[in-house]
Image 1 (cartoon, rainbow over the protein chains, first blue to last red):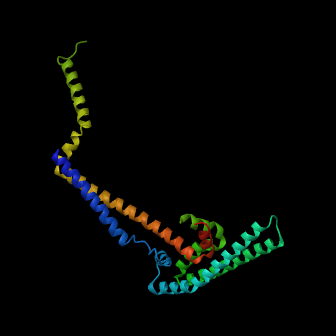
Image 2 (spheres, rainbow over the protein chains, first blue to last red):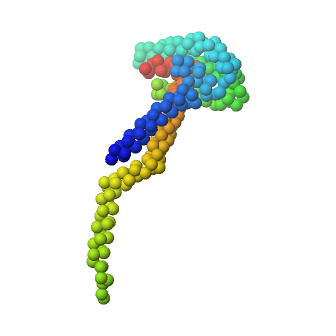
Length: 155
Length: 91
């Protein structure tokens, strides 16, 4: 009986030891996730960027970021105007039509700028990875509502 | 037809043997016997280590894929003003 307990206790102890050790080693080496504080870090791992490529991508992202924030504000403002007009009128008015048109234009402009940025980033990568990057990002331009909802749901 | 001389006693002996074997199984006597043999005891410990390592590898890989998916979402949010706007309006 004693032998049975010793063998199984040893098996459990070493099994758990192996689990925690290997998990720790894996998560800090070959299964290490990207830095959560740096959104651009994902591109480095996903597209196997060299240091020079990563530096270039970071530079492009840094240059694009302020413009992206401006576009966010423009979309927010346009949405808010539209919401206010919808609530202020009980029926379709030329003002609402104009606001709808403007909202569409703002979004279209954002999509065009975003696509321009995607092209620039893809050119900083190797041809194959650049193509894969565009393949992944094109959905943001082609189906912005669908992919944005997925992004929202994931958070 | 005439039965062999020890037929009855043989039948009872076999029944008793079968019952003993069954009760041995459920009392895990085989487990005691197994751990008494060094090579089986060693095999149990090695199997536990392999199981632990395999499970850790599997879970580490799952966590890695989850991290990558979350990072991809963060990246998209950082470059897509529409996703950003939707997220801020649907907290």
